[in-house]
Length: 413
Image (cartoon, rainbow, N blue to C red):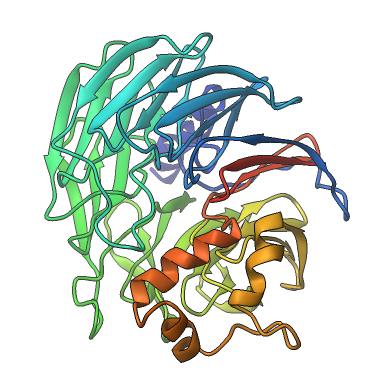
């Protein structure tokens, strides 16, 4: 019986090898045993778009796909950064793509889920949702679709999870939650998993019927315990983060809690897996946490300088993640030792507005807010002037690809 259950889980990885998406595969582990970037990488190429980039680069064979704040989806030649094609939508694209051998799928703030031909960017179909938009200043991303076994799964601001036929865009089913679904769905075997801003984490069968749902604890100032980002699945467990400051580990089949970790004073952001090691990025505590996935035992924390909203991309030895300060970090997975691998020009130019030039420490929040006309939300918008890395990095053949709010896509080698 155990063997049968494991066989149900394994195809999520096998079958996703023909499809690339945020976190590389449909279980969103974000791990690849590829060659690490050299210790002092240079900019191999950069490509400038017409707006801030929140979405993450995804590579399928020789092409890199990225969405932009200029409402465009770009296909670039991954070795040179040359533009192959560009498709204009009616709204900002803060969704990362999923792609199979024929099409690229993504969400736009114009309220549509798109499918474009991977070769020339020709529109194959588009599906209208009930509308797409950010729910607050820190809700940076729309749902990033998953494509699995000929079905596109995506969440929507209209509080639904959708399953669409990949070939035609035909609606197969939709499932109503109580809040916006901006988490990218995860597929593990015959289970589709996603959290909602209503504070529940949902497990559905691939026919759209509910298997189970889990209610997050909530927190004094964030009682809903909204689930903003995608989960990750490994073995028979699913891991996800919440705005209630918790990291949750649940049994995949039953939804029963296995362990929970509380991060005092901060939302937890995005989980990723490196073998049996669970990595979690955090917002206000500005760090990456490492756990033994099975037990939840805390191992180490790796500090950043500003909030981290992306997933840690891992190889055999290192993890890579960016922050709002426009710096890309390399983290030694065994120890948590961290160093800055790359910093945007905008970060170097704008850093004195936010960091003490002598200590390199973030200036007191009271001073930063005062500089932003006593507007806390404006302060966070101003951080983006540093070419913030909200995107999750992608590693391929010794090159790391990352995009920033300076509008640039970078290839570092």
